[in-house]
Image 1 (tube, rainbow, N blue to C red):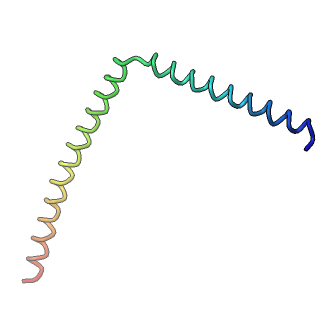
Image 2: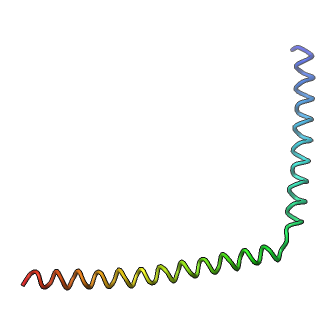
Length: 80
């Protein structure tokens, strides 16, 4: 094999390894610097959104039941 190719492969592998190590260190540092208070605020916001969705789904369920009642009453009177 050509010696230039061997040197390029070895050098490229070292550069890739150094990049992966630096990237891993940067990600770990960024995760440690994240503000835990902000994370709690995000969790609180998400909980409020889920509660609003749940309330909306309950209202939709009541509407559907009312429509089913209306449709069934209309269907019963039509058979007579």
